[in-house]
Length: 402
Image 1 (tube, rainbow, N blue to C red):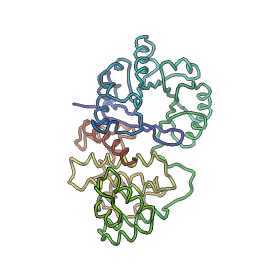
Image 2: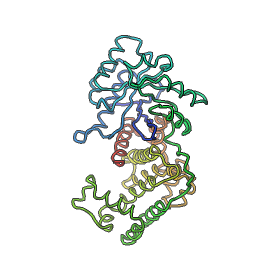
Image 3: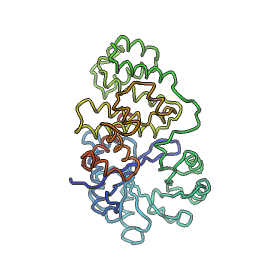
Image 4: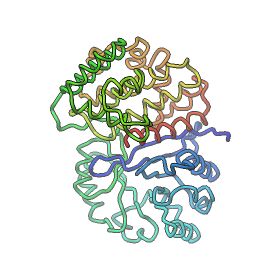
């Protein structure tokens, strides 16, 4: 399949800050609006890469919002996606035609969600419910609270409201309090304020010490003695090793056995994931999930082009690029707490060196920035390969969360 467009994702949060889904859109390298055929291709491509023959829907409980036009609502590609996990976003002006409205009602009967963009809720509220399961409400200017109040008053019980752009956590709180159901904005890059704890907690200090020891190739008994200081960490490691997905074959009961089975590079990756989730300062689930997707996406982008073993460094660079926000520390302090390879530091500080461009490309895919095409071209990675890596990283992040 030849592709010229790039997949961009934006997370949707519910009022409890959980990531309930993603809005996926095609970004045209020339800034044009995608054609019907291109939107069909998006649906088909997504279905092909997030549905597994044996394991089914790879995104677990996530919903996907996809840009659409009425002309593509009867396509076969649409039937490949699970209807309860699929929401198609249409512009209100596209519903002026009666055949378009009929097509929308037909997909809704089939269980597919429809989100309407560009409607004035205060005027059209109830009239939209035969067509929309979601309606997008847009915020402008400073007083998000009073706008959210007006929307909440116009809300129809059968419809859910998606607010965008919700750019600050204060605005998020105002919208959540007033009954909006989901939010799209830049919150996946913003620490959640409210917890004044800065710096490392005791668990994170133990994890950092272990990461340093793994990097220094310390022997297993030394790692074991440090792990024993934190019973919760020991429990998590044994649970991880004994999970069905790991396939150890028999129950592993000793730390030494667990470390031996896992190996040092996977142990380092596991510790890095734990370091991020053990945060109590800037922690928000969306920030954590973004870090995991970014790390995995950077790794996959470099897989074909860099030597074996470099992928681990790309994963570390991706995860560490949000660790300052997760830990509530300046990046300089984060880098002082653990010794990282020089090339990883160059990537983190200035998006430079061997890994910097891959990290920058992984970031651009989540920022809706128009740098995606030029960054991919500079690395000689095709749009198809970027998009495949993107959906693969998204699916991998769900399996890690599980």
